[in-house]
Amino acid sequence: MRLVGAEPGPLRRLFPWLVALGLLAVVAGLTVWARQQDAARRLAENRADSAEARLALAEASLTAIARTSAAATATALAERIRPKSRCGERSTWSSKPTRTRAKASCARCRTPSARMR
Image (cartoon, rainbow, N blue to C red; front, side, top):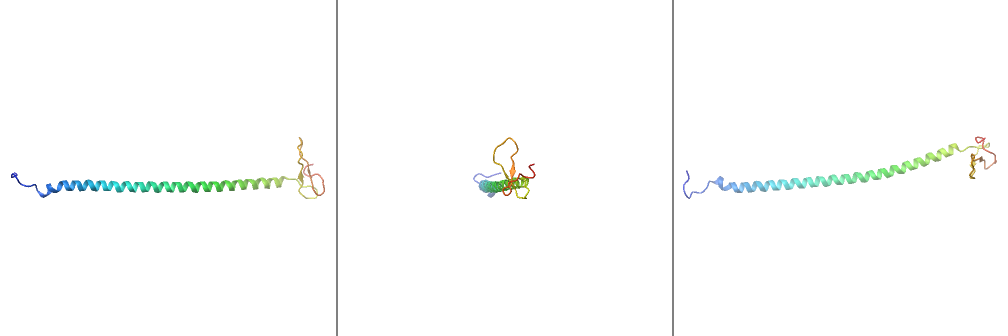
């Protein structure tokens, strides 16, 4: 039984302060957590941008290599199928447009190519 005019106990007097302190700690904790999440998101975006830039660079490099390789292959194939004349020299193709096969002739001996006969 309480007497009239008696003050509340020490725990009752500290209770509002403890609740306010607890709420302040929760707000501070949420703020720190949110900042960490934001920093992690920014870091992930930067890594993704960096990876995308490296991918674009690698793709451009690979495209250049593929084009060079295709050109080298086409040149090698053209050199391989170009016929030889009797003297062994590579012949030159006639540039005249005809309906028949273009005739090859040797620049040195002017003979038709052995393969073309």
